[in-house]
Length: 169
Image (cartoon, rainbow, N blue to C red; front, side, top):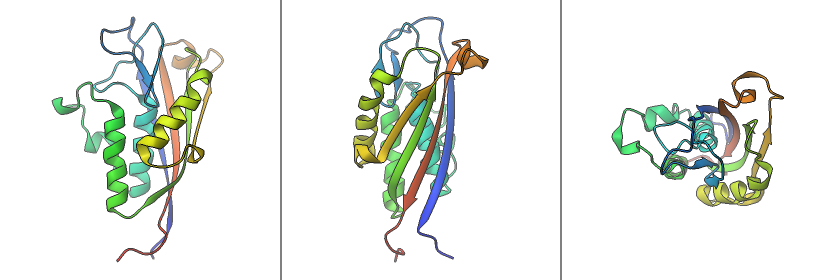
């Protein structure tokens, strides 16, 4: 049976480096956030975009970000994760799906995310070709618990809804 609505869920986490690495600022949701430490990753480390890509790929039943952009491939070394999102959105268009909305959560003890959330929503919306009203980003701490609470890294979650207006030909 053909269905016109699908959902997807994504998750990602990255460990902090001990310091700010040269040429590798903290980036979340496509926005550079001033902080004294970088996230360790093969790409730019944008854990929020990675979770979003996984959610979109999950809704499409196309695996995960590692399947399409493996960290063993030098072509993706230090890549801007927004480029990965652009490619994932191309997969959506090719399959004739549209994004209804995305809901994203950042868990970080530090730095404070609230001042950067409007810019993240705008940047992500532009990257996906949707309106900022279709993008929600929220942030929380873990009240000092776990690896996030110990300021060892950042954890992110994404939920997406995709839809089709009509059955494809």
